[in-house]
Image (cartoon, rainbow, N blue to C red; front, side):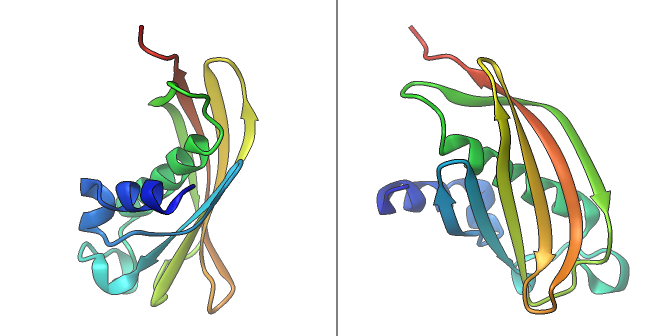
Length: 137
């Protein structure tokens, strides 16, 4: 992604609200970083709320898909989202890494891991299926 594309993504309402930062965006992969102090909604033991975990994972999946879309294509609605919560996300920094598993003509499947990079702890893992919308005529 170009610096302009990164700035445009980070300026969208959801990333801006939670101060999400793109750490990596290359073909078929993406990583966003979340700072604990930017997330006010807390879960168990002052961790990031589970709903927020899923939302951050979906954001990373969409960003990952954006790296492989053809001109005019757009990431469409989420078709399926399955999250396994493994441990509470309580680190000062949370990394959300997405990797494209398969891209078809109208559907893409993305594997996402949410972890504490400082502690080396995997907090959640998700498989997310997203529709691919063709260029508008």
